[in-house]
Length: 336
Image: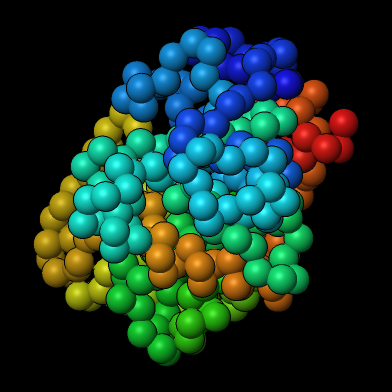
């Protein structure tokens, strides 16, 4: 099969032929229908050691596909089933896994493999798609569930004023959920305005430009200092900017993956007595299922700007390291 291969830091991905996968007893093989290119994939190729990634690895964890083969111990899936994949692979038997929360399993690993024509995953990582959701769009369930978990972690209440730093896929989907779940104001901020229309279409009530005067811009657009600020970029200095923007005794939720450390002055957070929270992954049994159902309406699909086959993946992947007008790029091997 064809796959996009990671070799080393600084080297572009390459397309190569690799052996077709075979399932272990508890696994299934999927024909990949869709796989999103995630910002964390870019981070992994720049600093692979913390993620345990080496030469020959196939990236891609936002996956949907059709079951084409099952392991000997798999009884609840069969060839032809349409599924989306939860990329956190837990042990399957600890209390967290049994509770539908493999992200908190002590043995959890974040799987890859989606940048390929076929991928092998544990059967317990698969969830059938609802009727009315296109197979390829099931790949959006993972980022959609990540964004929903952000809202759950924040404790957002109906009527809250919400600000979101970053108009990438996760920031836009946090805005989608915030408005869907009752926020009175949802303002997305970014250093460029090319995602303004997309943010508003997904439910935001306003859009602000980052930079000097961000706190004032957000307060103006929110009708007062926001109750909750979500930092969805992962760049140095943005937790500080969020703390400056949020109201007294408000909440800042760190979502973006900031590798290499950050520097900030906690005095503003202390003086305003804010809550500083962080959010990662999601609950498989609750949030992932809700995310799948939300795809029925077709609104979250608005983050998709490009649908490509495997051939241009190396070039598109490198272009995403720079600020572009693209949002979510979906790899669809069948387009070749």
